[in-house]
Length: 304
Ligand code: ADP
Ligand code: ASP
Ligand code: MG
Image 1 (cartoon, rainbow, N blue to C red):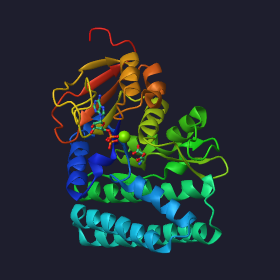
Image 2 (tube, helix red, strand yellow):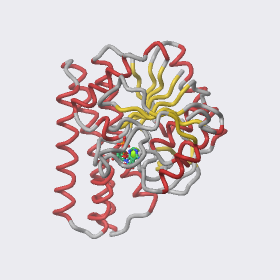
Image 3 (cartoon, rainbow, N blue to C red):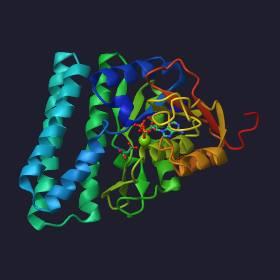
């Protein structure tokens, strides 16, 4: 079994969602569990919406909600063709937006966003993307099934930076995900989101979908964890700033930590530490060029 995580850039719009779906389709024989981030830019928009609500800025809040809604409607229209499925998904998205509006309205009325209330808003990004990607996968004939991450990723109550509880996650992952994988289905969860033992929604901190992938990969003792992004792997420098940057085929955990220290946001090594410690290989791959080898991150990096 493998864990495949698609970052926001890999599910940025309908075209990218379908491309990600084809990548999953091509790996069915490896029994994938899939984790998705929110569509690119969505967590930022939600963060802005919490701010606007807290300041009581009704107009800018409405603008942000309209932008969020437009993005998701556009993605769903382009990524899901089968009429019945598209209709059901559209109703589900209505429901999620209604819930999101309610939560933001109460923040606006109270002029206060507790960390707990903010997390419930931020989680909407992954709740939305996960529903859309599941439907897109089913359109491609992949038997994907949405699993609420709140039922699996149990965390402490440090809202905004919650810590997954490895033992509880392992138990839940075995109970909720393994039977599906064994039945040939593809469990799909939004990353970044979890829940406290009391059932309150928590988030794992920015970039937290990588953590979700690593924690689930460790819990399930996956053969490999694949982090799908928009560049060819971990590179010697940020390719946006240094065009000559080259892909590092094999990177030790220490080297990855050093790259992160110098700003490589592609992967924060802390987030994959549990997987590396268990010697589960983590590979960073490019969803725009899926045939590439990407970068393999290993505990000692010997040979690289
Ligand atoms: P995702 O949406 O998949 O989570 P991110 O935007 O978080 O992707 O991270 C990918 C980006 O990280 C790349 O587009 C790249 O510009 C940037 N980056 C910075 N430093 C590095 C590096 N050393 N190697 C690879 N990518 C890097
Ligand atoms: N959507 C969250 C973020 O933008 C989590 C992630 O993408 O890893 O930080
Ligand atoms: Mg990221």
